Amino acid sequence: MKNLSHRLIATAFFVLMATSWTRGASSAAPAPAADATRGKVVYERYCLSCHGEDGDGRGEGGDWIFPRPRDFRQGMFKWRSTPSGALPTVLDLDKTITDGVYGTHMPTWYAIGERSRHDVIAYIQTFSPRWRAEEIPAPIAIPPEPAATGDSIAAGKALFDKLECAKCHGDTGRGDGPSSHDLRDDWGDPIAAADLTAGHFKCGGSPADIYRVFMTGLNGTPMPSYVDSIKPEEAWQLVHYIRSLHTGPDLPDVGPAGRPIH
Ligand code: HEC
Ligand code: HEC
Image 1 (cartoon, protein in one colour):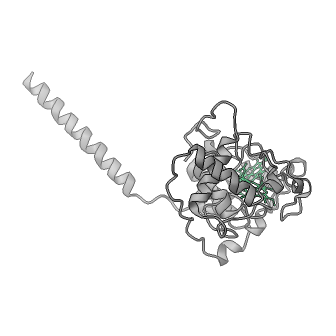
Image 2: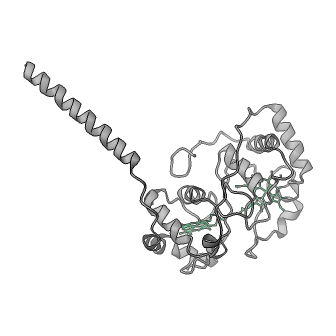
Image 3: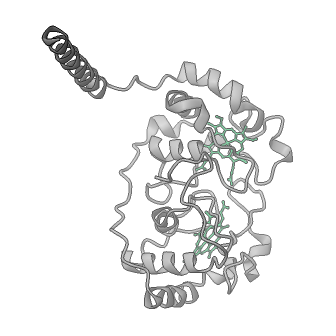
């Protein structure tokens, strides 16, 4: 009996050591570098039908899809944490590819796993010379969100009017402002001003995702950056106002793949 309990203790000790050693080893091991050659295989299998062999957004399905799949040749990306005009970070692209783009044909690619997503990002980066010529700047700082109150929502509404967001998004945020009918993106295609009342956002649903849209702008679209005209606390007021426009039941705080939004 005594022997058995000794043995049990020894085994438990060994298992404990082994797990902590593996954990230590896995957190110390560097993630494998993204591999564009492997990324090309992923791209051809999952992305080419829309984004095209040359990354020009003219895959077999490209002409039938609105909005059109992204043309990767200009290195212009909408959803970024980096300043207006800049390239996105790998994490920005990974977020879009993981979550998909709500309300468009861009699906979620959560299921292919992080390694394949990073490899395919490395391949996408071969389509534009910008990736070789430019540094990727640091993400913009986002200060902590103050509590949403009646006052912050009212201040956000006043800013929405003052900054003339309604020209495109409409007085009630439905995306039906006077300029909304003839908007085009930098690729020359028609583009809709987002309906801000639907409760779902292409940019992601968290308050920080919405904050980033005004402070970085959406490259390649008429949606400008307001970083030079609004202070961070005002940007939060706009976020509170926009989130108040959705009056239906609360939306779950998860991405399309059912995982928490980061
Ligand atoms: C069924 C069509 C379709 C497939 C397949 C598809 N996409 Fe897309 N993708 C789109 C569309 C449409 C958009 C543009 C959405 C928009 O601008 O509103 C897009 C946009 C993007 C963007 C641009 C995001 C930004 O910030 O501008 C990236 C990156 C992207 N896709 C990566 C991928 C990758 C990687 C794959 C394959 C693993 C893939 N897509 C497969 C349709 C597709
Ligand atoms: C010149 C027209 C224009 C003006 C002015 C404008 N926007 Fe936009 N906005 C757009 C367009 C177009 C899009 C959609 C881009 C897309 O779908 O790719 C957009 C997208 C957005 C989104 C993201 C929606 C989503 O689904 O992810 C938010 C939030 C937003 N705008 C808020 C604002 C606010 C707040 C203002 C004023 C401070 C403003 N916009 C001013 C044209 C405009």
